[in-house]
Amino acid sequence: MWEDKSDADLLADFIVTKEQRREIPIIGDPDPDVLWRLQIFYTCVALAIEERSGLLASSTMMMSPEGFGRVVLTTGRLVVLSKTLRDVHRFGFDTLGKLAKAGAKLVDDAIAAIEAYPDAARA
Amino acid sequence: MWEDKSDADLLADFIVTKEQRREIPIIGDPDPDVLWRLQIFYTCVALAIEERSGLLASSTMMMSPEGFGRVVLTTGRLVVLSKTLRDVHRFGFDTLGKLAKAGAKLVDDAIAAIEAYPDAARA
Image (cartoon, rainbow over all chains, first blue to last red):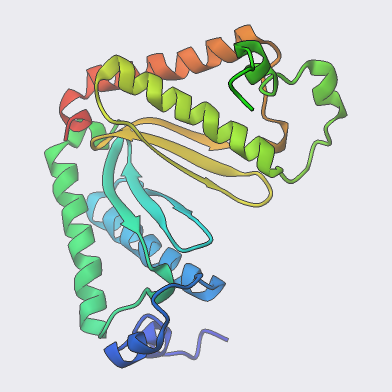
């Protein structure tokens, strides 16, 4: 089912334009689809960190039914990403460019942390 | 409601004797009470780490409805505790002594990690 899809098709669900966002209620419970996309996003960040660092990255995400939570990515004993999640039911990016930029920034920050704390990252 | 309870009363729910454990099915979904006890246990570990280290400890726990999951405690950029959780519906300790020992060991290990990676722990 997924094999015939182009990259753009696969990424389309991650795009929430300003107009679309305006139509989403400010307060709302995240549905399983948006939780799945959130998980895919941070899994991709973890995989990119692994590719660039050669270290295994683990992801732990906790989420209240109301869409507040926290995601922590670690390599060894180092926290390479820690982020409070909120308004998860509105998760998405204006454009593919902004999606790529947001992901790349998280990966860059994680790599910088690994370089700053090489021993903890390999513990 | 809680003020009149003794320490032993408050801790009684954490004790699952061998006989009691034998009566719990091997596979089962954790109920909210046991999830709450699990959270209290790791919150207490985090508080003890804070008290001994003077550093703020954050707890992130994720859990599938089937009782498998992961708990991560961090101070700064350091992972001071990372544990796979399983069979959570059977969570408990044989005796109060074993409960105290298990908690103390997690705190000791966390303090040792903070001493080994002081910069990451304070980042």
